[in-house]
Image (cartoon, rainbow, N blue to C red; front, side, top):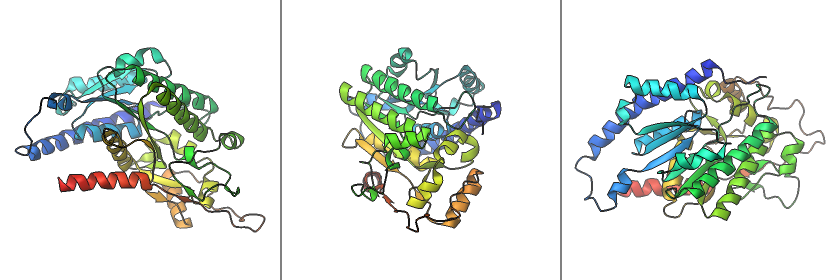
Length: 362
């Protein structure tokens, strides 16, 4: 199946971004009205807080748009990196026509190739943090995600982290990895725990053997990011989400959806086929980023649902439009049941619950 970034796909992304701006205008106005009379006396450092700027790579991708929305609602100024001139021109046209007016010029748009390192430090300058969402499209249109794209993923992650470390204003970076970077292991081995959490890493050799290029790309990119961050002293957090879902998610996130579902039958049998709503995932990104000033760090697994039965599997197939054969015609040929494992997102759940409780108390 060929996947290319068509004009229709690009228009869909831009239309989604336009709707985001309209929604954010209403949300931001409502928030400002509710906050009147509740604001504390300003300190000498409040001008820094008011002028907070962050950068989002692939900012018009399906996840990127959701993250930008969460950031705008929370009062951030957002610098969006896009990878082609058409997106820049379309977004600038929206700005000129007044469709961006409601955001009070809090969005900036920059074109850059993430695997070309030279200009990233200049783009990040003045930002306090970066969200690296790393959304790639197969330029050849030969598959959802190729081995070549896995190499691009690694190069982009290294460049982004290097540029963050070299930029004095950057304090933190949040990188979007994948649950697949944690779950592809040989669970028949006795020394492999049946509970998969943020400490687990997929087996690189197994990903190569099964030609799971999307899992391999996310795995290698995340490991490269951690290596560079530790060498350069940059505070990094990575989020490992399940299959990203939401409104029209398959039409707007085609490449990643198809690539993620390679090996879906095996994931389903082991209890590892998990999904997450795009808006909750975006909220998790911002929550982790804001808590990095205190204690948040390391890796976080993020999912809402684990597909556990045939009915849920059929629902997922209808939603994606892909007839993935999750249910094999015959069970394990040896007659032995596959070893089911359990996913744990306790670390992220505790963090987000603590943040919500603190806000409610305040």
